[in-house]
Image 1 (cartoon, rainbow, N blue to C red):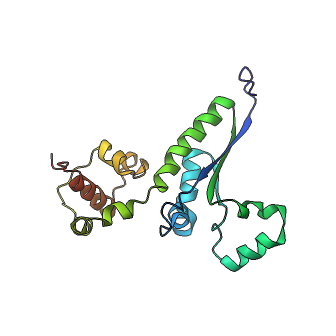
Image 2: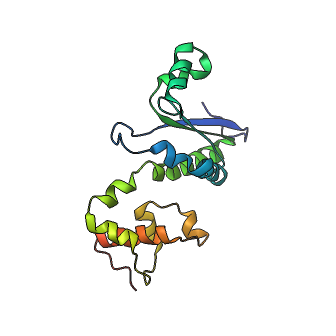
Length: 178
């Protein structure tokens, strides 16, 4: 039960399932963590939530994971569960739930295997490699693609993201040249 009349901080935690069974060949842990864990760090700073990838398959070394699971230590109890992302925050009730909602929306983008969608059509790969230099990007196209919204807000558009957006627009017959 929550007491919302007082702004006493509460801890809110959520476990988000990673769809490993639906996409067994996709590296979700690598996509979530990013190079040197920078994607996860950025997500934590942006959403003001703590995040951890836990569960079976969350560790790099499979042998060590098996040893820790066999040890029976309570610290490694998460290794018996399916792969998931644990999101938690500590704030006033309304703020805590708003942070969690924002974090869920951001994490969802990492749990959609975009590579699979793009590589289904052979010619879309060519568009990904050679994007149109005149392509103009709109927020709706970025949101439909599932790219992080900070890329648009901060004006960070790299060649790869322009390629992905023009590929997505081509697949959906959307004219990006305005």
